Length: 176
Image (cartoon, rainbow, N blue to C red; front, side):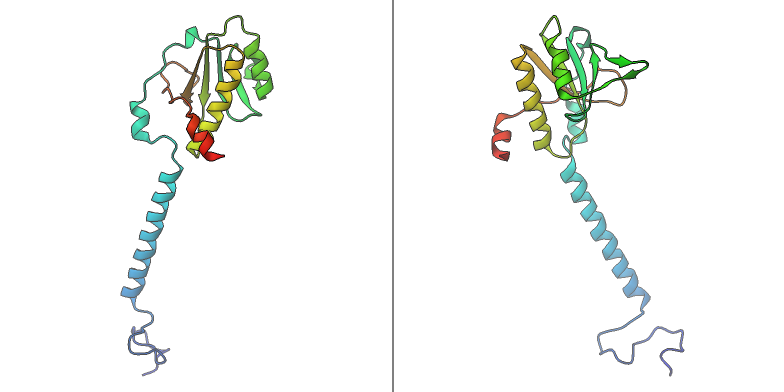
């Protein structure tokens, strides 16, 4: 029988007794194993990137004192923050402020009681902790008594957002 001319699945003439080529069952098993390995890898990757698991976000206490805050800003990076209180706008848009500008605005506030920082999701807890420690240090130097970190939402509302845990000094030392 000609191996190349047949449509039937059979052993390759050069293959040993245990090696077969072209069997649909083998291809399906290999595809299923590859898909399972990819799925397991994706699950591990996604779970390692989460800063605050979704189950715990629902359990976090909620913030309800936006009216009492002296400073509220949404932090994206040291180059971009949107100050929401005192409102800094150019026409209908919030102004993108650098860290130094935010600190100047914070220093110029008549009261230094409560500062609220809205943080986006971070890929690693050490990075989130580093950002929190830096802002807490800078704002405490300006005389702010309470500094609260919130998990930023998709809307402009501040009240009702989850309150993030305060920064941990020992995590920052361990990372250096």
